[in-house]
Image (cartoon, rainbow, N blue to C red):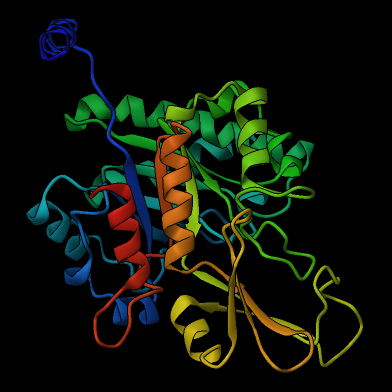
Length: 353
């Protein structure tokens, strides 16, 4: 057995074969709360292979408008000192509402892409992450595809000039209504795909990141759709993990969020915030969805989110299924005042980092 393994290893070395390690990425928002909760020097660069600094945004005229506290210098210096972590600038985000309005013609799209790539090169990033969110239809799908083509072209064009590889990741929403409007050939232009497998049940009171489900939405179903329809191999897909969840008040499970009752509401909270709010709630883990419910004594008031057991279970499944890796939104959200970060610890252990 030892001889056979040694022989196989020798063949792999001769052929230049490469075994891809399990990738762990994480988004690092550039706002005061995130920076205070997790300063740059506290990021675990031994865990995160890729850190996405978020966000680079723009005005309605296409001018770049980075978040005021976005600082590449400190993050890049810490990442370089710690090892080989790739640092990307993430473009867009959940508050983006005007990218589709800007990318109305090939010329305007190319101009915006040039600004984005120029910003990435000027500030020393290792590449660009396109996080195109919001309304998606046939027209916006064409505009999104146009931007993907331009970013890929311009990153490849400038790479020989700067003398280094510039990576390109495409972050997509985990929904068929979103994905079906993007050209499969265009989506394949990304070095890898980040699937935002959270916020999936946004219109009803339900767990927002179900890994599997007997009926309704699930991460597994969207992954199957993505691989079958777009022919994206599993080793190029990262699965998203949320370090946040939702508090539901006066809402029955499955009920529409906007139900006309002024006393009913859904509140998004970080993992730390949910722990504090649900301190006296009763915990239940769902082995199918891998989600957690914290139930209160008050009728129709509960918390649905991911805890350390959820994160570990999802990472285990992603590894077993042969996907490229996972990524986190966002890496600061589980850090307690004493410096402990339970979800990060569970992620690191499950990923074998």
